[in-house]
Structure formats: C-alpha cells, structure tokens
Length: 500
Image (tube, one colour):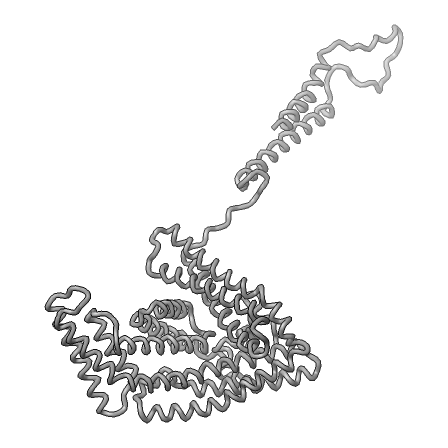
C-alpha cells in the first residue's frame, strides 16, 4: 500500500509541475533591444502535449501496480493456513472412504501374516531356532497387531463407538495397527533374505527342502484321496462337505509347484539367481497351499472318528444334564414355561441323534453340535462329555474356516477374516459355542467371496498349469497376465520383491 501511495504522489507531482511552470515568471533575461528572435525558438505562452505524457504514464503505472499488489495479497490471505505456509486444507475423507481403506488394510495385513508364516516354515527346517528367532518374534508381533485391528473393526461393525468422531478414530486405529503389522514384517525381510541367500549359494539347499516336502506331500495327497473315499462310505455328504474338492485342489497346486521347481533349477543353472529365487518362492507357496488342503482332509477324518466315539458319551452326559435341570439345576432362573419348552426341545434332539446312530451313515460332528447346543440352552453350565463335545466341534469349525481362508485368500474379503479372528479369540476364552457359530459364519462368507470372485484365468490361451489355483490361493499376486510376482515373507513394501 505504501508503494501505491508513493506512486500516486509521484504521478500527481508530474502532472502539477507543468502548470506551476507556466504560472511562474520567466527567469531568463530579456533579449537586448534590436535583437531579432530566432524563428526556431519555442513558444513561451503554454505547455505542449508531450510534457503531459510522461507524468500520465507514471500515474497509470502506479495505479496498476497498486491494484495488482492488492489482488495478490488477497489471494494469498485466502490460501494461507499458517504464517509462511501457503497450502489448501486437504479434503476430509468420507466415512465410506475410510471404511474402504480399513478393509483393504485388513486384507493386506492378513495376507502378509499368512505368507510370512508359510515361508518361515521352510526357513525353520534348514536353520536353528537361534537363527530364526528374530523372524518368529516379528511374525508374532505382526499377529498381535492384526488381532487388535480385527477386534477394533469388529466393534466398529457392531456400532461401537457411536460418536462420529470416535468412529473415524477407530478406523484410523485399524489402519494404523495393520500398518504396524506390515512394518514389523518389512523390517526383517532383508535379514531373512540374507540368511536364506536364495540368489546365491543358499538356493541349492532351499530347493532340496522344498522338493523334500513336495515328495512327502505327493504321497499324502494319494492317501487323503483314499481317506475321503472311506469317509463317504461311513458318513453323509454333509459330513465331508467342508473338504469337498480339497484333494483336486491340492493336486492342482502340486502341478504348479512341479513347474516352478523345474524352472528354478533351470534358471539357477543359467546363472539367473534372482529369477530362480522367484520360481522357488512360487513353488514353496504352492507346496504350502497343498499342505493346507491335504491337512484339512486328514484333520477332518480324525475329528469325525473322534466325534463318532464321543457321541454315546455325549448322549449319556446330556441325559444327566436334563435330569439336573428338571430338579432345578439351572444356573439362571427360568420360568416354568421356558424350562419346559427347552427340556422338550432337548429330548427331541437326543431322540433324533439316537435314531441317526442306528439308521446308517450320519454326521458325527453335527450330532455333537446339536447335543451341545441343546444342553447349552438349559443354562446348567458346561461339564462332562457335552462340554468336550462342544470343544471338539468348535475346534473343527475354526480349523476348517482357517484352512479355507488360507487356501483361497486371493478372493476372501475382510469380513470373513475378522469373524475368523474373533472365533479364535472366543475359542481361546473357552467359549466353544460362540466360537463354533462365528467360525461357521466366517466360512460361509469366505465361500461366498470365492464364488463371487470366479476364475479370471479360465479359458486364457497359454495359461500355465495351476496358475488359477496359485492366484486364488494368494501364491501369486495377480498383477500381470502370468499371475504376477510370488509372495514372500514381509509386509506390503517387501512381499513382492522376488519376481520370477
């Protein structure tokens, strides 16, 4: 503003100066008498136009500069947040944007934890506990952070907290916990690579370890196929439904592993250690996936056999619970009508289970589940065979859901993962019925996600054998037509560092 005033004063002075000059007396002496004035002398009676141009231009320039300075200062004041800082405030994310970010963070963190756990299992076969202890510690820390993030998200879904600001902070907490889980794994990725030396002399030993597990798993897959045939003869299709298709999927992963192991050896012989390490990691991931699937079949077969042995004892124990409830043994006061209805329901469940035992093939785990829930409704507490039945059923459901998510994590969303994490917490807190319900719900959601995902590689010409299964299982990141890079121990920054 001072510059503008000074310019205006200067311009005004230039404009006034000619007028003052005209009004003043001529200080030049008069010419001598008789002297003839020159014809070229300028007239002294007025001011020429040229004398006014320069002052006028100066005044106009001063006004223009003043206006420009004012506009610039006004614009700067509107965008300034702190003295010396010129920036516009970032847009506030909407709740929907924050939720999408939290969901993506949960999936990423869970994938990183599962992948890191798989690779670490191969590392632990070759190295001592002291050498692998830092990586085990990092993995456990990441698991702790992920569990906390899942718990926060679960409460958020249930409407806790209710305040809008607190809910935004809860989503920030979810993202932060997931980021910390990834950071802990990223921090140890380079040290793990240095220990394994997959791009150098460590590749040969790693290949031997992977091929040894591959051969053992091939034999187990054939045995699991025979086990499923036997189960079909003694159980209903519903009993084996949790592992339907697992043997075929395991074979598909093993075919992919075969190709990758061969590629790893060939590229290593050609001197391309970085590519060989990528092929090895893809093979290890496929072997780990196949092991999850085969173990699922073996585990379910053992649980069905154990459940069949436990059913008679669970029936006897349930009868004892019913007798105690009839004589006022309920822990919580129930009205006569409520108690009568629940006793009648429990009697019906036990009668139906007894009939199934003599009618032919049945589902022992489902029988135990119904017995345990019928007893639970009487609110007499957990004890004896019914409590053991509830625990066996819950462990089976949680393990089954976890295996399904692990083998199909390329398509499973955050909802199923969060429910599974809560089911594991409930199981650890000895709330078997709650854990069973949550695990079954998580499995249903995961299966829905897989059906919606489909097979993006179906019908693609030149597709590598087993590629679709590797992408579905999260062995490859599905970033390119060939499936993308394999996943490795690490967080979001380092997990894709090995490109085959």
